[in-house]
Image (cartoon, rainbow, N blue to C red; front, top):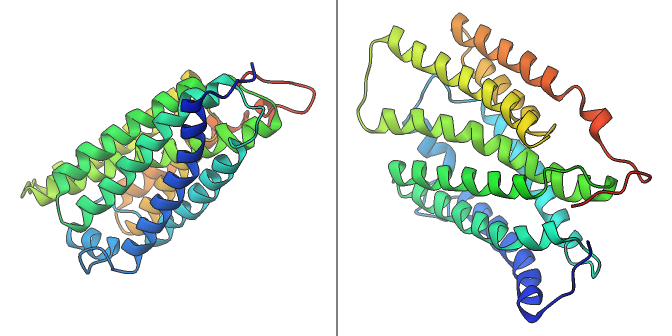
Length: 257
């Protein structure tokens, strides 16, 4: 149902693009080393784990931010739907958590990073629950798809962040136990990809999981167990996403986002 804009709604409409611009700007400053004179890669390199993905994997952020920019403009339309109105405050919160995570990461506050990324994942889940029903093609590509990609990546990043926190806390298990833990987390990522694909009817979510697992397999060249588990996870995730084409609404299938 289209919404009627109240004064509060108008404020939230304006806050969405402001939050997007602020988040992207802060992440850019972080990427060029302007936050505490370090880059995200330098912090990551200090805590190598069996789940650390190849550097190129993080280029997914460019696609995520393009999607969020598209959403920010799309929600400015005078005729939008109630689900978009519902997710605006959650979206602004997600931007604040994103910035908080980057700030904490650059100040080596790894446990705080873990808490913040968990909260970000929960926030994105709540957003996903509001937009779980397929809408028309525009709603799908400008709302559901960007958040599905974002939520999937943050879910994988949360598991990686957990491994980084263990490393930063001084936890140093025997190699076989570290491998077992990494394999368990890879399995968890795969299961979550399938679970949220079903629960939220989100066909993009497992694509992000597959991308993360591909990066892990490439980075961990030489570790047969990790490569095999990651490959199995990629296959399972892509199979979960295969019905994606059938699920994309078309112009004759109006939605309820």
